[in-house]
Structures are given as structure tokens and as C-alpha cells.
Length: 150
Picture 1 (cartoon, helix red, strand yellow):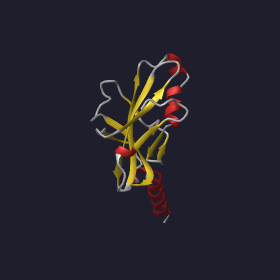
Picture 2 (spheres, rainbow, N blue to C red):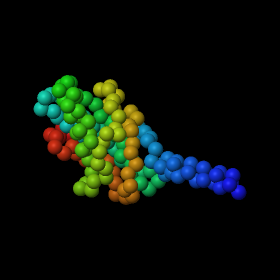
Picture 3 (tube, one colour):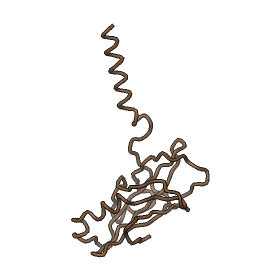
Picture 4 (cartoon, one colour):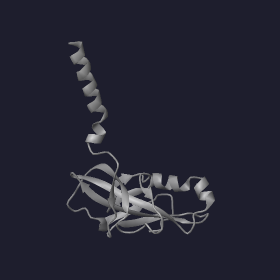
């Protein structure tokens, strides 16, 4: 009887620990599409960060995918002050006026030559339900507290 109870508890604990993975919350990637939205941030100490983002329907939920690149040589001062990381942390993806996701630190950095359609972008599944009216054409990348480049 105790052996059966131990096995049941172990199986239950294993399923509980793996629940996020089973629910589809695991990281994944998608190739960037040609209708993606773009935005970014400019630093007073020099340089810019360009961000490309798109939304996809994953089992009836909205997933936000994106990547970013440095442009015009971001200064070492901006890098050392973690300005890029702070900017990405407060970044917002909006569809029209509706916020779909806050925080863009999940996005992957790509090189200048890889900042193109078809390059795989990191994705994050949101809790928002997919709406038939959603499209990348109405998508906005916003970085509050930073001058926009998009």
C-alpha cells in the first residue's frame, strides 16, 4: 500500500512540475515574417537598438515573437549601464491601443546580416486570447522612457 502511495505521489509531483511545459509555455521560435512591426530606442550617449516583432496564433492564444540588433555602434557607456536591458525590460507590444505583452527581454539579439525576414525569433506565449482581427499591420513596438526609433 505504501509503495503504491509513493509511486502515486511521485507521478503526481512529476506531472505538477512539468505542467508549464505541457501547457505550451516552453520557449520556442518562429521565422520572422515580412509584415512584422519595428521599433527601437536611441541612446543619448550614442547608438540605437532596432526591434522587430510579430504575433502568431498558438492554440488560440497570442504569442509575441521578436529579435533585436544594435545599430550605429551602441556606446560602451550605454552597455555598461545596462541601458539596453532596462529598455527591453520596459518594452511593450501593442495591437492598436491594447497591450499584449510587457517586457521584451526574451527576444534574441541578431547580427546586422540576420536582421531579415526568415531569421528565427524567440517567442513568448501570452495569456491573451487570439482575436480574428489581430494582424501584424496594427502591431506597435513601444519602449517607454526612451526616444523611439521606429
